[in-house]
Length: 211
Image 1 (spheres, rainbow, N blue to C red):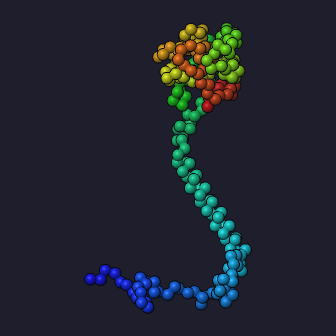
Image 2 (cartoon, one colour):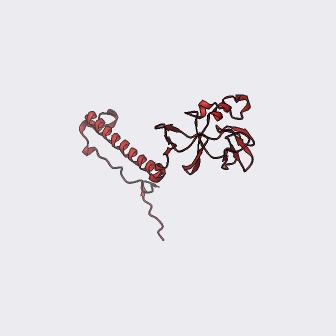
């Protein structure tokens, strides 16, 4: 039985290595037949053309890579309906002093409270040493009379009840008894940090852009 073919040359097997290596000297220019006398960059003495073609190829490769990456980034980006909900404009003209508004933003409850002058005066007297997560009024509001926070307790994610708790005009979480003052700062209970303030800005005196 013939399992494979073994060729012999001289006195030992060569395993197909008796084939002559292809020689392309007939196609070379005389000055390049002896490869030991040439160096990189000579070629056909058209180095400029070679570099230009290589540069064009590099630019094409980079453009293709950019297009490929852009495709994947576009594929993984948020859908149009999700981007549309990323920011909302809110009309706060109907929220009376001491009043409260709740709406949905990015799947979370958003609290907007119109603080009275009494609320502002009470919290302006609170020392930072009395707070779990010390923050000043300036750090939490753009206009002192308007508080805008995400209505999720920072303990375990329950929704606090506005205008309730041990601090007048504050928030109370019924799940585990966390209390927040009227500027959303954690004052009592297991909540470790203040209610989160989302990014927002006033477009007019009565219109707020959240997000």
